[in-house]
Image 1 (cartoon, rainbow, N blue to C red):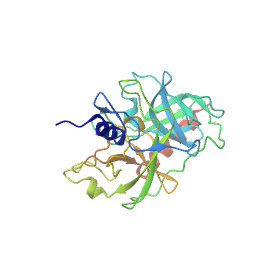
Image 2: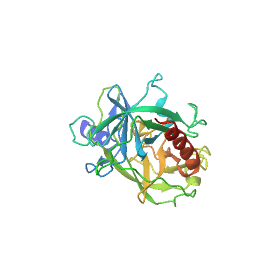
Image 3: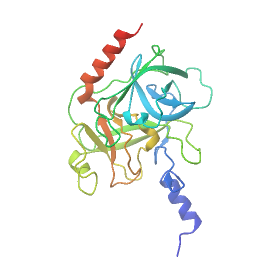
Image 4: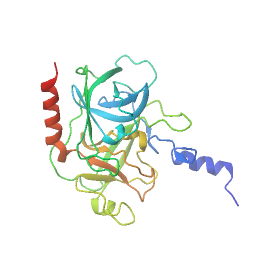
Length: 261
């Protein structure tokens, strides 16, 4: 005997909505963020469409996930800063051209290893109350399990073309690497350069890739774009930890700033 329409609808809403049997591609179980209280958030766009998240880590630099470039056909992203809505007019919202896209040399399409991408804007971002730099973690130590951190994102384009227009956010507790690496979860694929958060019913999903995991006001990780079931507690959300890559980030920025006219 099948479920009646009402319970099915309730379950669908609880899980964040489904399209063609797939997650809608927004933060599952999250809620709309208060406008412009996350002024570091960036939307990586192609042809005016949101593809991935990112965040401003220096006036001319955005950090995101390397996997976000997989389906770009070599095109350069544009970066939207200062936005809450992707489509509505907002006085401080501005689209920046990208001078350089630099994936970590260790990243690849086969796994989540070294899944970081640096984007150099054509010019320095205009910093104000709606556009600000987010501090990143530089001390290479794990975040304590059960620490509650937050993620935010706009989601992604799906088969129906529907997507959240406003920024959504979610708070999730950090899982220990041992728990995340259990054979029933990620089965020892989570390295010391990665971290996880609980994903039971509330989770990041594909279009949130590249956004920051913020713990106590500091970016600790980047949402990885690797293939993963969203909202399934047996497949916790995976993030690339930032601190182990501080030297790489500093080197790329120094080289890029030195080359800028």
